[in-house]
Length: 114
Image 1 (cartoon, rainbow, N blue to C red):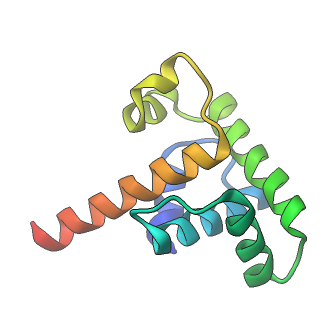
Image 2 (cartoon, rainbow, N blue to C red; image 1 turned 180 degrees about the vertical axis):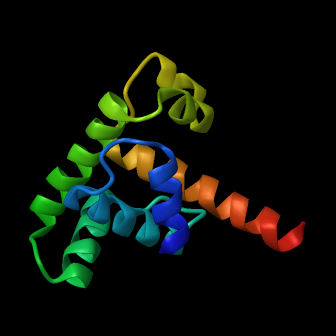
């Protein structure tokens, strides 16, 4: 989870907010299911169960707030580097989670193989 947190912090935003913890949890669950993309309702339920502090619906809202905050306050060039088409449209939370998980997986593979 530390590598996920470092990745999210590198994108800027207000990463001290609780919603970022849910975003990191969602990316962690997505990593477990790659190369397939898990459904957001499954991800939200898993984050809710593991954190033992909120409902799946509130996890979904929390993750959405984190992605919105990254878009509004984060380093947009870093976000564009993840997915070039984000230059023209804001990512949906599920899309962001999947792209972030793929990027982290690929980076970890490069570090282990390189």
